[in-house]
Length: 375
Length: 75
Image (cartoon, rainbow over all chains, first blue to last red; front, side):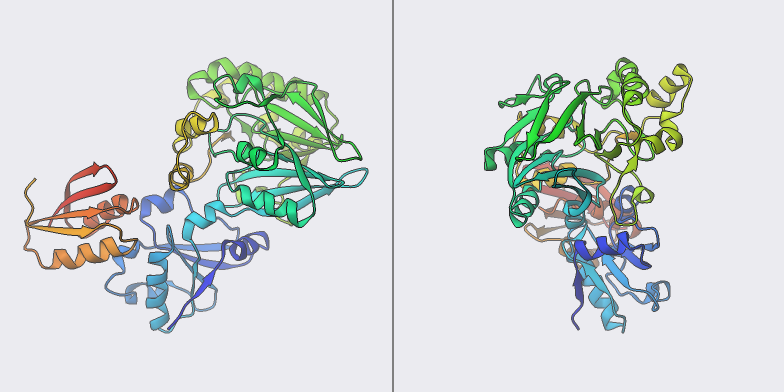
């Protein structure tokens, strides 16, 4: 019997629509505990495929018949095997095409708003890893912010809407994912902007992005205003797009705040982080729509799958913006830090151009969840 | 390290390295050692977890360039 493949895109739709769904994850327990497909109404069963080699009889009672069932593994091979066994036992199940590898790499573009004089801003939701990147489009030109290494997705998308990519930005030197910024800039002849304080060790040329820089996109002059906001990294820079959207990088998230990126420097940077969040951001309009570079938990997704919130609302509701006492803030930010992202040092070196791992190695480096926030 | 049997699982993708390992183990006596060569990176954690759940002992693991080598003692 044949079993159906389900794509990461189709699973993403189920996450966005909060559908009920049953996931049989056949990776080993450690991999499952570390990172899985998250959905509000998803149920899970984790039984490693190697415990099912003799048959699936033992788990048949645990796999529901009144829900859609998806079998998931790392790359898809084992999930096909298990899905076929379930199918032979009379069950209708699908498997995740490309496995968690594909899940980690899927980007879902969601329009998050219109710009004043025409043009749009899109958020690319990397649903499996929680990374958010952006494309600002105006009158046939596009800027990309915090792109992932799946560069074709942006190039194809820009192509499909008839926009030429002219500027590429990274809000900071990323440690949790490999930036596609340099590759996109090379392929499109766009200008690649980086905060110079994060770029002291990079091996390639770039345009230094500094506080107060204004970059215009398209003939209708969509303004991208750079705002220096250190704390996650020393160079971390936010952007105000069209006086309406605040791209906060890894400084401010919806339900959490950034953490100093390198554990060793947490004490040095916590003051900068406080200054950015409690002074610089306080001076901005509360009407700005915050568009962060990450989400941590699936609850942060809006109805349409996008991740955004008014700055004023975050000042009221985000715990990290409501710690009056400086000492307590210091404690929250520097103590009990979550573990560093997988292979973060190699990822940083890749983003600096110091090492050039092949695609398979890049994939391995990025596997797993991101952990750049403190809640 | 001494082994009673060597299994070449190089170039095989998941789940085949473990499927073959299981088969090969069935042909060994308790206490004998199976040596496995694989190239699938996922094999590392999966073999360790599989050996544990099956009551076997992963006694040694080596990375020899691209080839992952494992020695599992049958329980």
